Length: 153
Image 1 (cartoon, rainbow, N blue to C red):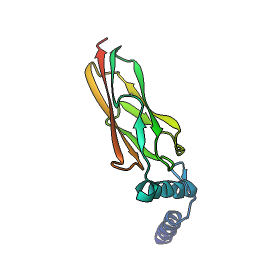
Image 2 (image 1 turned 60 degrees about the vertical axis):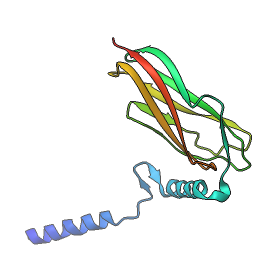
Image 3 (image 1 turned 30 degrees about the vertical axis):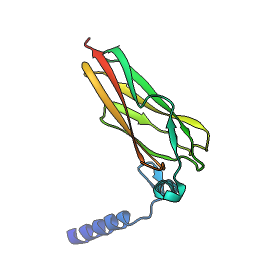
């Protein structure tokens, strides 16, 4: 009898593993397809455009008190003839969270990359970077950075 229950449990687990669930970890299959299409556009040189950074790619944020959350942004303009797609904006460490525009930026339009730095436990001079991947000719990887002097509590 124990063997029967074990076999039934194993069959149930196998069936559960093989289901075609349309939603995994908050993402649907449609999200996955949309992401793949975006990545294909970013990597296709026929879709390359150009970007102009309107703010300095390195910003000095001065002094802040430890524990403050500091926001920084970098403005840019699509100076090309194709939609500008920002596929990723990745911060250099867990104390910084980067945000990118989700929709393509039309030719001539402006937008911004934002980042929030959590200074808790980070006393001293901090230099952080944000790596931006986009469908731009010349380079698809743009390095943004900022410095902040965190004053100990």
